[in-house]
Amino acid sequence: MAILNLNNPWHPILMMFYLILLASILFLATVQSEPLPSTQEIFHQHKNRIVQIKILESSTDIKASLGTGFYVSNNGDIITNYHVISKIIHDPSHYSAVIKNHQGDTFPLEILQIDVIHDLAIVKANISSSEFFDFADLTLDKGYRIYSLGNPHDLGSTIVEGTYNGIVEESLYEKIHYTGSINPGMSGGPAINHQGKVVGINVSTAGNQISFLIPAKFAKNLFENKNHEPQSINLLSSIKKQLLDYQDNYMQKLLSASFTTTKIGHYRAPGKIANFLKCWSDSSRKQENLYEVVYSGCSTNDSIYISNQHSTGTINFEHMLISSKHLNKFRFYQLYQDFFQTSYSGIQASQEDVTNYQCHTEFVQTNKLPFRVALCLRPYKKFPELYDAILRVASLNKNNMGIQSTLVLSGVNFENAKQFSKKYLESFSWKTP
Image (cartoon, rainbow, N blue to C red; front, side, top):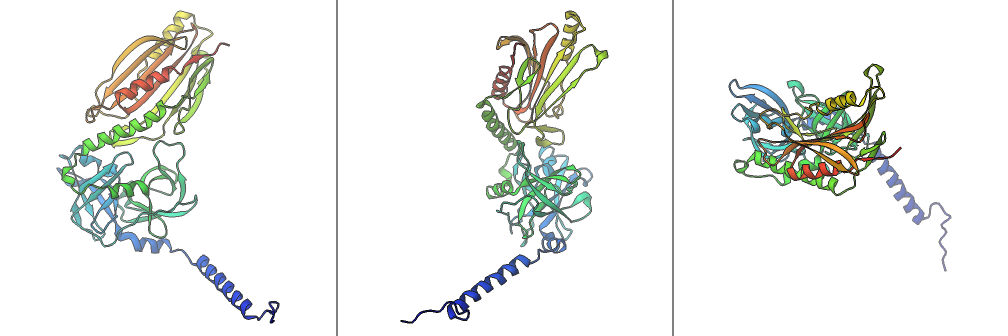
């Protein structure tokens, strides 16, 4: 019987193994050493797939604002930001919009679909493009190089290199942290990977290379469910429905969970009740004031853009522990009353958007603590069933100390405002020293 001598390095079986191994090594080396396209190459390959969107003041036909859009089909469908085209939704008699393509031609714009929650819109003009973007399905790691395209300050098509830094943590509205410069006029433009696939849509900046992108999945979903008959869309009704559905979704999640409380003096008060809230604390202890105030609160860091005069979809609250060792109970009560009556004007809205607040005040008791409570509501004029709500509470169990709190909810329905305010008030308690 013949025996294979595999110790012979030139045996045919071993030779075949060596050749396969060598081929695999060479292939991997070729793949790993393949250079990525340069920024210049990426720009020249994709520059014709973006357009400039101009919002014109109707009486002069001169630009009032600028934005960017990009083709997502060969039928000429274009993705941009909702905020780019919002003027023609809210004031169509005074504004119009045109699309300017890479050849410098302009065409009237029509709106196919909007997603006000994620600040997106699909628009179209009487043009088509054989060159368009696809959406990326890959999950990126932090530090991945991506490229933002747009028309900053009407300077022409521009590409900006930056890095992907993941989804912003502790945010009610999902967005990508992009380390790169997004400037006015770039809103609605695509941020792409080196393969030319869209990973996000330019939306906003905080300056100092801190910018934000809308994840591509939301634009993809909007495109796949677009309305093909724009004339049949009532855009204000669509905005109302989206706002009502969204606030009900996150409010029901909050109402079904237990409220986390935080210590402030001898009181317990609502604390970080959701992971999308940012919380802080501070104090004011000036001897000449004859009293001390300790502050604590939480708030959302972003909001839903409705128009340049109106934002919504926020939650914030602040507690004040007010105390004094120097004022008698009558002077302290007057000081306490002055703090309680301080007006609040932190929600951005104009007289065209909202009515005046209507308030109801009463005295209640919760967890054996007496409180003075005022609930104020103002309805939205364009979107009935939505309200801004302000809840003011003040404890009344001490003559030289008390906790006051202000809760602000914007863009909620009446039932959610009532139920959330009730649960908020019931979260206060006193811990005996």
